[in-house]
Length: 156
Image (cartoon, rainbow, N blue to C red; front, side):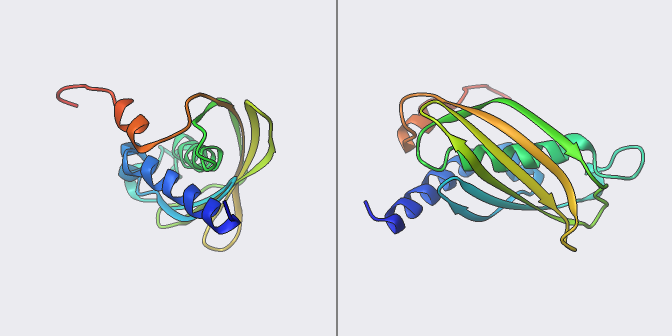
């Protein structure tokens, strides 16, 4: 498989995940770029994302970073989940800010991976750093695997 075919396959895997990622869609997260071991996502901060100090809630920032991490570690078509994640908040994100989260692989072993995510605002200022550890599952991702793994919950 050529490098371009690998990149196209990575994009397909992540577009398939995103199509079923109700949380990311409801948060307004958009895919900007996908490559093997890399994901760049964006999201605009809106009023319902603010905490009592009129700043973006830390959980929202964690979710954006975690989503970028998830897409980067699943980009090779091998199903992976988080085993650990941590975040350092550098500066507040405010309503109207356009955030970009870029996740990239630092190390990928047979089953475990290490990924870093940087979140910046529209001015290029760092808002947060995230580090995530992944664990690969089996079998590889396929459209059929994703559809079979959907929870069947009525009324949600």
